[in-house]
Length: 444
Image 1 (cartoon, rainbow, N blue to C red):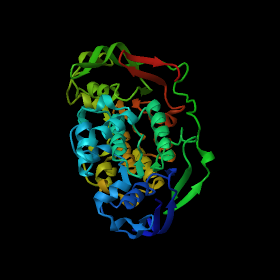
Image 2: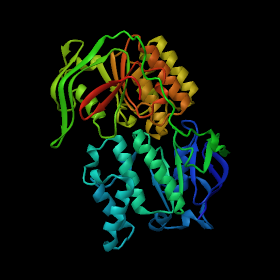
Image 3: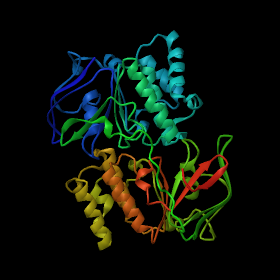
Image 4: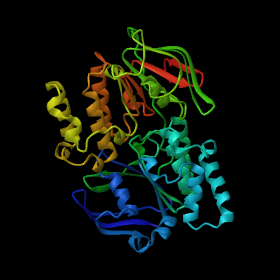
């Protein structure tokens, strides 16, 4: 059943947009940060009633004429922020709740759950509270819910932004396999690697129009990245001794003796390894055993600590303390140099005219830009950054990566990122977190 847009108008985003997505194919939707990709998905689903004009059709049927309980049998969507789509506390309860609402017979529910879990390989997360899952784990369980729904058309908005590379490759191929069974898959992703052998169509959203692009532009494999620098002068920054964190009765990791050095460190590890937990422990927001010291002094929870160490959290909305970009950035309080840098970014990314808009009406990528601008204008000696490139296009990634490199002369950064391209040539050290501790790598 073909999904078609006809003469779509919406504010200043879309003007007379007409396009048809191929049935049984996998389409990768690309476009700059703030181009309107998430808005397009909201129009395609029409779940939360955007005030647009024009028609969205499934075959010859207007989507708006279908009641929601029938609509979701044809079309389902994974949000950019999966936490927004969970209703129940665990994946198991979420799956039961979803399937019951789809009026699936009770004797078929368990079979559908087991099938979805087997496909997505998240059985170990079935009974975990969503609040305890990492960002990448939340994205994987969100996909499991979509698989259980078994809709004909699946929309995914940045579904792998926090997923480790091994799982990402597996899930991309899983989506490609679904198209072989007649499903239609439409997804947007700023990271174009690993799609070349799976995607049927590459479509770019630019200035409110959709354009077919050559699939040959996609990369077949992950390129190699330079994430370490030779002959870097080593100056101890953070020392961890006999540090361990646990979840329930399970120890996530044990770090016997490791020292982070001044400069830019890329921190990698599989989903659920405990990278974000380690950051919370350093910030004294997570219980742990062992000793941590900053430049030779034991780290203790105090106001003074946050004058030395601050963080960028995964979800930008959780970091905002004001309601508009103008209030959040507070330009008059910044140095002339930082004011100029922020203004450069606002002009570059088309945000200068949105300074008095609600932060919560911005796209995911635009929120991330404001979050990064607010944190990078701080002079805090150490900044912990948890997935800072989520939702950002290449232009934005390059801008912030280069700014980090400039600031590294005076400040240090430890950056969790599954997206490594922005850190190519920027990072001084590459460190992996495993259950056995932190290991410094020379290369991937």
